[in-house]
Amino acid sequence: MDTYEIKFRVNGNDETLGVRGDETLLRALRRIGYVEVKLSCEGGDCGACAILLDGVAVNACLMFAAQADGSEVTTVRGIGTEDDLHPVQEQLIEKGGVQCGFCTPGIVVSAKALLDENAAPTREDIQRGLAGNLCRCTGYKKIFESVSAAARQMTEGGDS
Amino acid sequence: MEFLRAGSVDEALAAARDGAAFVAGGTNLVPDVLFGRKKIARAVDISRLDELRYIEEADGKIRIGALATVTDLLDSELIRDAASPLYESALEFAGPLVRNRASVAGNLMDASPAADLAPPLLAQDAVVELASAEGERALPLSEFFLDYRKTAARPEELMTAIVIEPLGAEDRCAYYKLQLRRAMAIAVLGVAVALRMNGSVCADAAISLGAVAAVPYRAHAAEGHLRGREIAEAEIEAAAAAAAESARPIDDVRASAAYRKKMCGVLVRRLLRKALGMTQGVVA
Image (cartoon, rainbow over all chains, first blue to last red; front, side, top):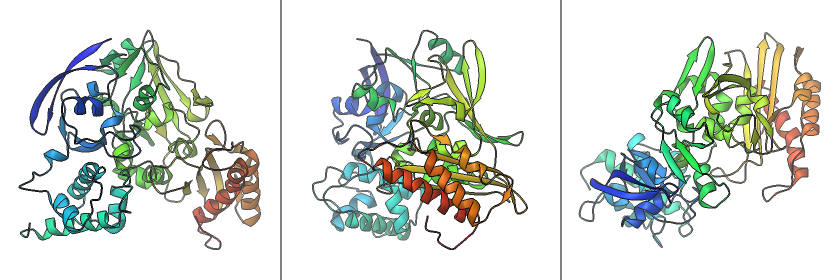
């Protein structure tokens, strides 16, 4: 079995690991401990494994780990900390946008990517921005409200 | 599986000489490998070949680099202005996480009958450029799809660009993807129409259909009812009927064959009306 040594940064940590050619980035990340990147459909349908790859939101299950060699990966843990939450994380808690929580890491990644590009999204912008993320608990209403509130918090500032 | 990252197009072509699968965004290929739908001995990663990632106007045509992503289509004013059916198909393509990785060439190379980008590209007379270590060639997209998931590309050939004819300010066009939900859905039916206008006369007509046959295709018989004519109700009805007649759909989990065939006529009628600004009865 061919293995390859790859290097990338995850949430600011330098990581070096050996991967099989056909190992997905999702499986490699989880294998070295980044289990906040959730393994669910593995077909790109659910968005639970969303990460930022060099700042762009993508599904970690849809690429080979070796393709990420030399890249900068940001998981949900690299977006805010427990002491200093990102407004999206803060508002998901505030508005009850979390139930079982399994989809939440991916939702946070997609929402952050959306708000980085669009500071004042409409409801439709938010729906489209989260179109690749499935939630089977909340029915999305509270998630959309959370993202909308986070956008307001970020533009008004100060009250976080 | 052997993995090799190509540092240049030439390196990719050399690596593919003895057979390989090119992987760009990976959104189709990676799960196909993971779930055993495809067995690959060697993958050649082309995702870092930035020279294949561009959208530009050249010699009166629009050139789309093979590695332009679906998100790149949405970020391009050129595509929005001069290829609006393609722009609209990109809006309905999967979701942002997939659009950020999926390449235009990958959508064509995957050769799904339901490939979202195929009908709008066919409607603008797309030509695909293929390269191998032996040389380059170009062929119309309409000749590229041979059969269900079969293309004219040889195993060692890399798609490098897709070239389309821009739509002018006078031209009329429309696109619709019939789907069970507005995101992450495989098309029940994809339809694009593009009418090149010369005053009130339709100088050239393109109607293309996806997900209703083994390959996406141009509905030539339907187009024949429009080309060279002033389009009124009778021409629209004839084109819609011919489009439905041309369809050879299958029954699957998304829709029955009979429904798809009927909707071919319905959507072609709606889109022609919409393109021509005939408000009555427009739903799509």
